Length: 151
Image (cartoon, rainbow, N blue to C red):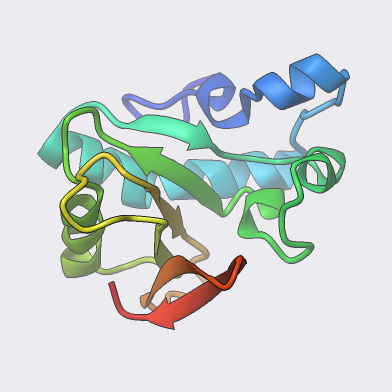
């Protein structure tokens, strides 16, 4: 099923962890609608402007989310979020492009290291009822993940 011109449902639900652990990662109809909104309003515009986007994590069923140690309140479980990268494109520049465009719920530059353009990844979420354009940066401090304001 196509979610937008260049994104498919399979792409946003694929998980090697789910396959390996025999976890059903089939989304509900509501989650599919949420994934369509994410693809059409954030992912496709990024693709149109910057080129092919790699989805490293999209929808996660509650069982899959638990298996990978995700947050219990993760937007991934509702189909609102994806973790993305663009091959040979700086993840900080990708995050700043999305920030400049606006129209998202949350944007997190995760575990990016200055001077290492392919480090980390970009988490972006879209919930039309909550377009707060929140920008954060995830870093490790004393072995724990800490979320700092700004990119």
